[in-house]
Image (tube, rainbow, N blue to C red; front, top):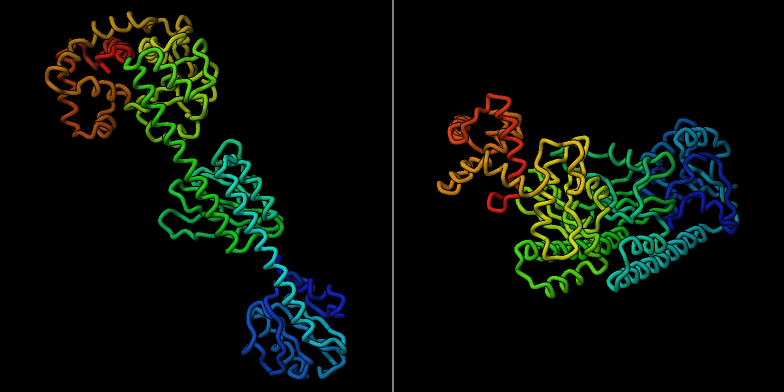
Length: 495
């Protein structure tokens, strides 16, 4: 708790009253010192309180104005003037200029020794240091409890109680809470934080003070690899030293939890791969699934698939989603999830992508078939239906295959020759066709995405037309090829 000029004047034992500069009473006091020289700024600086009998205060009004001007410009916190001592009888010019500069001047009764003022500041600083050390002890006790299993949200709440401030742990880029159970950033603080951001390429300050409609806030990046930001709000914000300890505790905890998330993703990915490749016996599969998703009921469990080139950039979102109810695996441009039916709306919203889900598993031995069902359901998603379940395929896309067998037959009839050519020649014509149609037959965009020259793309497309017997300038042929491509993902050897 810092000492301010108003606190000094309020101490009854100092018997002081304000003469001028009421707007500056909030200035923080670092020290108080006696100086009777004509220019005290040679000896005192920012945060200091000048104590004087008035011997150095000039009698001339203009010189009084210049005297207080120098004090204010030097950053002094204020001035305590001994009453009925050696100051000029007329201090109107001094008081007038101090009022204009918001520089507080107090009159102290004759019998009060200046040493009492200094002693009061020392006592206040000792009390502040005692409170600060207690806060540090509480902060590291909270850190110890977090290692013992305290949740991140509970750790944040304990730290808030330790320092009597509100804490917000955020993702640096989006300013969203790092975990779902952490309180979001108030809109006023978000606005101030966005306004304080510098342009890309400019050096970013590690610590920012944000001016708010009421008070201020502090923001500082955590020392982690996850680009986290800590924002502190409250009436009495912590000093930099205490803030450094907070960032150390929270940074270590976030790194620990991030490592746990990555471990969960790795184990879940390995289990899903083993299930889809049928490498496990029924007993082994059930044991491993129960250890990772103990509450999952296979009667309602489904496999869900999202497809798209941007999914690899959503690894951080996926890591936050994985808990005791979801397993995930990123495989190329596919994201494969195993979870209880009913979570699709939440998963789709968080990942901002279309999802296709299988019918209920019932048994883990059905995992490869469920994956094909999910892939087929994904092919039936569109802008108006971002989530599709395999059991809903009779609805609004009758032109697409409804069963894995139908999908496999459509793929082999339309694209089988191209797939066979790729297999024998080691080419990637199917991928080229997929990208070309996904980019709406834009030569430039497709070539850029494939990382090839436009003429190379032209050659590949002409080869595709020769092998398939269909023209990509013909709408009917384009539609046929596109629908067949949606069936590609349920044919195991074509994936």
